Length: 98
Image 1 (cartoon, rainbow, N blue to C red):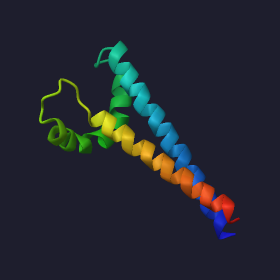
Image 2: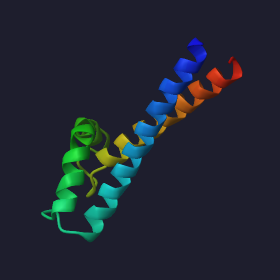
Image 3: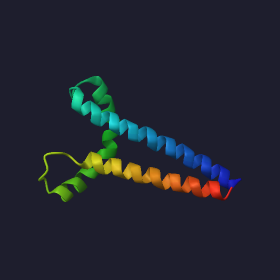
Image 4: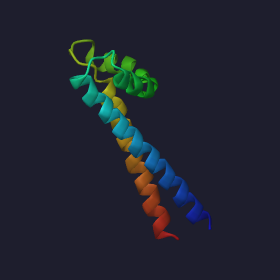
């Protein structure tokens, strides 16, 4: 019983992380093809920026402001990817012991 509930919770977290990773990718794509003041870009910017902003000091520390790109997006995407892997591992664990 508890394994089934835990599996469903992990499944929900997995979907949320997947949708968020797609949102990050859409924002990255839009930053290349539309102007920053367009409404669609502003929507994705406001949706993802609170999650990307905490990685900026770490990105600055890693690069020392020597790179012309902002790698905070990549760090955020890496963390989301790692969380997806951990949740998938937890789901596999739940399936083994149901």
